[in-house]
Length: 415
Image (cartoon, rainbow, N blue to C red; front, side):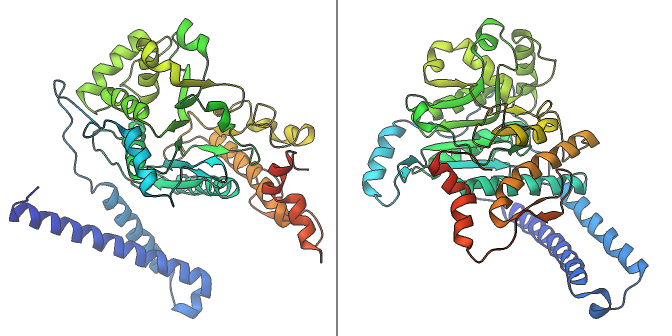
């Protein structure tokens, strides 16, 4: 697409302004870090007024970054929306691609290659504690993926201006499938969900004849037509033509504006218990599986034998009890695989109860990782560590005993 010189110039000025703002912000952060690292007096003499000036400047730049995006036009109601050009014969194309690229197999050590995708909003959180808990959530996912040999991608951008907020996962998943044909499964996980059983592995052979694995309940879906029959905060989608077709059908209710608002009315009218609000991705998928059951459900696995989506209420206060009674590796309500903080909004206005519960979940999982190194949190509400065993001159014995990867191979839990 060619741009006029005026449009191009405006774009360049916009880019330069953005770069200058980011440069200023980076400089402020660098100064603050240096002052905290080498000491205030060793860097330069400062005053309370100078500190206040730096904080005000940082807040100003962040505020400008938040307000820098220009509104995008919404899709008209009668417009035809698509995620992109129609893809056909994708399965056949992948098979040919594998033959031409033998160094990029879709399995690793006999297991299907999985790419965990997650992300958060492009802009800073409304409060600093929100960014702090997003960082903890990322660390939690990195730990799990490292232990289990899973690749991971973290997205901070809206790849399609029409599909923002909770709909943003759809264009991302599609792009990952098309750009990484070697990946057999794309695993989506919300930023407000944390792994809390670091030993448990998803039983992938169980899903050999399916393309979508999602926590759900058949009676809620087809008998009650409940809007919470499935949960799209944590699911796996096989890289396939079927998946691309599903994403195309799923996304039709997602474009912001009139389409999303009118679709919300349809969803509220047809799904039990759904409040009146614009279309969301979870309700849209639920409605699609109900209304086109014969087309989709034979390739969908509704998983409820373990906590692919463990709702946080009722779990976070039982972590100490779990440690007393059970071992990790169970993945169910006895030791939940995932704890999902639905209803909490750490990047917005989360209440104290939510933040404390997220802290407990993170530390509960982190203790399972730290055990290899001989440490643990002083409590599930403390970021401070304590030593849980003496130092040794035989470290390899501890590796065999406490490394989660060895525990997985032995098929037993950690103690």
